[in-house]
Length: 80
Image (cartoon, rainbow, N blue to C red; front, top):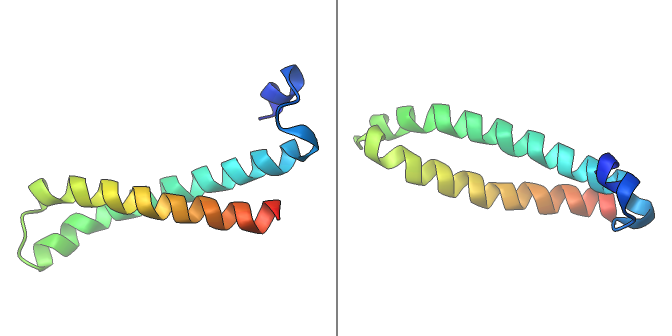
């Protein structure tokens, strides 16, 4: 965001808040994806499901949905 802001004024005066929002969200989504990707196969095995075939769709869905929730929560807190 900082580099883009030096070339264009598309983010306006709130460019620092936008960059902070994106950075915090990225950190949160990556951490959540790592935790979900490492723990979900163990949980699926505990319930008797095959973790090799079931974990990839569940991890992708969980990370996508919660990633949007994290982004909108951080954006609401920092930008409004």
